[in-house]
Image (cartoon, rainbow, N blue to C red):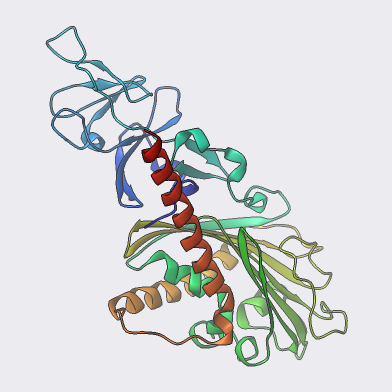
Amino acid sequence: MFVKNAWYVCAEPEEITNSPISRTICNEKIAFFRMEDDSVAAFEDRCCHRRMPLSKGHVMGDRLQCFYHGLQFDKSGQCVHVPGQSTIPPGAAVRTYPIVDKYNWIWIWMGDPALANEDEIPAYPWKTMDDWGDKGTYFYVKADYRLIIDNLLDLSHLAFVHGSTIGNAAVAEAAKIKTLRSESTATTARWTVGNEPPPTYQKMVGWPEGTLVDRWQIIEFSKPGAVRLFTGAAPGAAKGEDFGFTEIDLPVPEGGFAFHNLNFVTPETETTTHYFWSNAYQIPGQPITEEITEMQYKQIFTAFHQDWEVFNKQQQNWDDRPVIDTIQDASSIAARKLIDKWVAEEQAMSGEAIAAE
């Protein structure tokens, strides 16, 4: 079961043109296309006549025409033309979905359209801010989306999977960890103090040889599959303590650098996922350049592709046998509990609605 009353990233803007495409979100097949005015529309990918996928159809101005028998649907999903007859059959309509273009992603609301509120889209302003250099991409993952959330909330794996980029031994063996819970989020705050920077961090800043840094990793999960990260390092960032800040949005300490990263995992099915991510960087006192933006993107792409391999192997090996948990899993356990709670709440609302009919 999936959370439905929520916004999911469903595509990058350039993917959607006036030639419809099909994508499955939360087990629902959806046709995406652009209308004549360049707005994005999302229809269930099924003609109400003989179930031909509408993604095989053609955009005709502000209408979508079915490839099979030529029925035409307006932006509301209502059939407005049937070739060879002047009347429209009762019930000749297809479901449409609320769509928003924000942060250079296309977002879809999978639940009750009356509840769709654009303000509930997770904030990620760094994607379009001039003083942050940002780039990301999309992975198709053959794994349960919750495995990706587990991965992002437990960054001890960086020491073992990402030793050539963003990991080193300290992130697993020396990290101080706090788990923060609310009714809508699960957050892990991690600090390592006075350690060598990992390879990617050293490439970003170029600290003098032997420089020791304090490193922070603030990871926040929110509805329905958003994981925001504020990570970075600087000498003295913890201000002489063994643990620093826990906030997801603070100025970058002088002498260091930081990443703001949004990972949005959108379930396709129970065992496949659309994984959208974007990574922004800032080095105080240095301009944003295309060269550094591309370099940090390649470093993070390499790391995330290593994770992609992990997810696929995990899913192949997943069965009903029990697993153990460690102290590193506190936030991922909290996130799974939130998902279960949101699904149960929606099921209860649905049951109440049916009972009232």
